[in-house]
Length: 618
Image 1 (cartoon, one colour):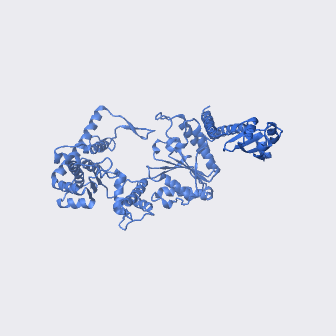
Image 2 (cartoon, helix red, strand yellow; image 1 turned 90 degrees about the vertical axis):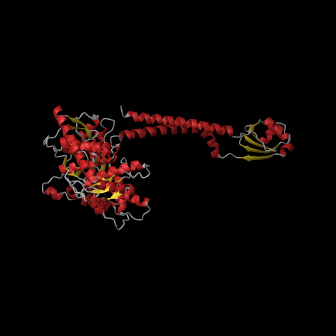
Image 3 (cartoon, rainbow, N blue to C red; image 1 turned 45 degrees about the vertical axis):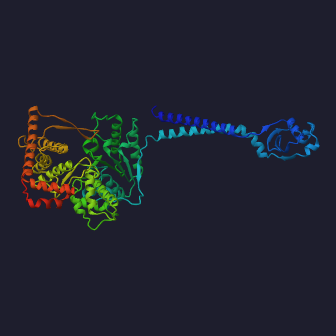
């Protein structure tokens, strides 16, 4: 009965439209009727008197109808006697032949078509109007019925015939991932050599990785390389408010792919329907679970000879149902990592194609400044650099525009119009100088890339320090150096102004979070030992941490708090030590920031070089 709701709405909507149209038509007709100047009607007796008086100039006879035109320009209408001539009728009414001779009389024969139309149209027009109304209503109802019948069909999009196909050459890096998918493409092109060896190609391939790493791009490259029909659908399109529609659309999507075999069916963001069943969180209603069950059945129901490959992408593989990941369904799981420095350089070059580049552009230096950037971030970076070059009225994209776009992607656009008092500017300069000085004074800290007191996003200023090379592992010494650097701005404000401001609030928050992780997650507290504390539960429908189960006693909790405080205190003492011993260097950095507002890496190290800072252990 739920399907009748949309049909009723369409039917009632059609009736309302017809009623409005009738009211409008009646209104227009009344206006036309009222404004039209209709000639007056007279009888034969009055016509005879006017002819005798010499007022009539012309009479037009059309059947039994008379159109009369007076000498003063007035027009009248009348009717003559049936089956009698006009002249004889007027004589009978006492009109003298002399008076009648001064009147011009014309006779117009009524055509056969006009005669029949005058008879048929008055009866036919209402019938035509009624038929038109019923046709309109039936057409509206039929549209609703068609929508009801197609409600359970999947809105799969067929990719093919694009002017510029995406291939593996358009995907920089991801060598292992491309190799896995090249085997899929080869199977679709030449299945015989695999079947003769007794090999079975995987039915499903799951692309896993952080957002922006190129999962959808890689799927499009598979479509371009294979040359077979490639069907794309988002998992969220399966689920509707009506129970059973998702399962129906799933069947239709797989049936469409089977009919076009060999083919590829790509399901984007499969975690929208493939989450763990029975979690009881986030309103995981029956419709989503029924859709997931239907996907599981369809993937099991593939014939061994059916050459249909299911590609799926997700950035949350941890929330997927175990049945979806077992062998026979998604046999292969292709992991897409964030690109390393060489891959970032290749990605930058791909996205820079078609853009005029200055001779000084060095993508290796840009890649070195963008650790942790995904492929999508790098594409956005190059695009922002091109936009910036246009705004600054350059004809080419230069190195400075690329550097500027890095900060814009990370922190947001520069807010140069923001009005800052001289006192706030000085405090911000010493705050950022404190961060930079502490980092430069620690042996395990990453080198400073840039220091700025220009506001970006929510930050009043910022200090960027980046590693010389990509790293997958972080040591305890590096963490401690990061802690001390985070507290460098706080220490600088307190030492130089004998006061602290709210500018350090975000630094303190990050430092507290990092210190707690060192104790509870990374096992880097000598007192607590190699243990982790607290079991984190994920709220599945939000996909983020929501609760932490406390699996330790209150005494241990107090001990954890003391260890966190110890990490923070040690880092703060180290920051105070470096700032106190190098006040001259701190003042030199702050003065340069007040004057220039931005210090690049070379400028910063040129300022502190005379002071001969020695890198100490954090």
